[in-house]
Image (cartoon, rainbow, N blue to C red; front, top):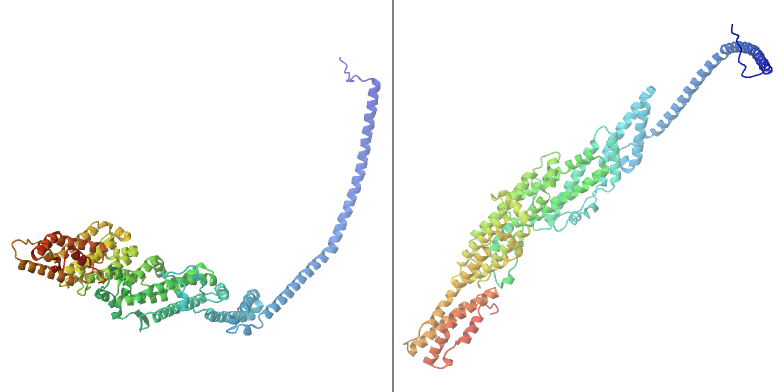
Length: 634
């Protein structure tokens, strides 16, 4: 049998004995601690039992007291709420105590801030009393005050707007238009048609916020529309009183027109003018064609556009709502726009129009067509016939241009310059072409409405005008009994036209008619040849052979030469060739015709008759008298 020997870890018996003693002591200590823990546990259990007994006692004695305290606290809160309610009620009663005095008609006009403050108090009081069922009577009275105050404010708003409206004087409005009848953007903002915009705006915005309807907006629109209409009407009356126009009142419609005689006299008087003096004295008589009644149309429409911009700025401050502002703008434009279109329609229907006065109006409408068309299309109320009137204006102007060409071509007047100078109608026509040239694009747009041509409207018109002028001049030159004077007349007029066609702006327009200048040069050359025919009789005398002719016949021939020469010099002493270059050319041709054979003629005369004293005209004296031709100083 094998004996078990515990491990000793190399310790001796004495050391092992000491370890055993320590372990026994530790075990004894643990046993003592367990005994103490048991004693403590018993003590704690006893204390807990006592605490439970005390809690049960407190629950029976303190809980009823807590419940009573909670009830007292709730009652205290109710008392505080009641006191606050009483204080608030007293305050609202104080705020609304003098409503009848404050909300009387007219109060808002003089003291708007106080009125609106009272109205705000009423609204707050209504909101407060609406939550209290016991104040139904007070709530009803407050609502009556509110409705009455609102009605009063609506009426006072009309008074406020009228009181703050400033009447714009016509001179003040017109002073803000430039020479082209366009608004001067830098200055029209200085025009004020509403004095205290802030006051009107405060009242309007309060009404829009607190009223169930937009009556204030309707009232504002109506008042501003009337103000705008009166301003435009005053402008019309002012303009009529400062022009040669005649103001007619028919059925409430103001028609600004000139008398028929005054209007139609322009072209006819121009066609009858007699040209006197040199070419440089030909004057521009475009003003003879002007119908001043048409000037005011552009001024009125431009003023309307400017005033509408001012109204838009005022509305943005008064209303402060883009949707409402647009509605107001659409409404106030209707009456004045229809009024002005009726004015223009009346003139176009009843007047004998001329295109020179219509062109500035057409220019204005073409420039502002999109804006005016948009205003008319978006306007509220009655239909605005803008597009119809716009098309009528352009078609009337186009027709007037065509009528002018027809009248120019078919003019039957025979009055002509006695000296064969440039006719006034030629100067007038060139001046008109220059005036049209300045408005080339406008004219092109106008003609495009009625012309069947797709392009080159202005060059075609210019060619038609010049063609009509040529026929007119040919008709007039038949009034001359002397063919030579007729030729001089046509030469002067053709040359005047040809020189004006050399203007860069004019030549640019007529670039497609490349043969036009050469045509006039050819016509001028023909006129020179026709004129020189008058000198053929004198030329033929000095050109005839003087052979086998006796002295008496030779002297008779010279007397005939002298007589013919003096007759033609006398007949043509007042003839005028306005262009110095052509005058020199013609005189050179005359000298060539006479003097090339004059030396032989003169030599034969002196040899046959003898002595220079028997002959009045030698070569030098002939040159002198020929050089005196076409001299207007004579």
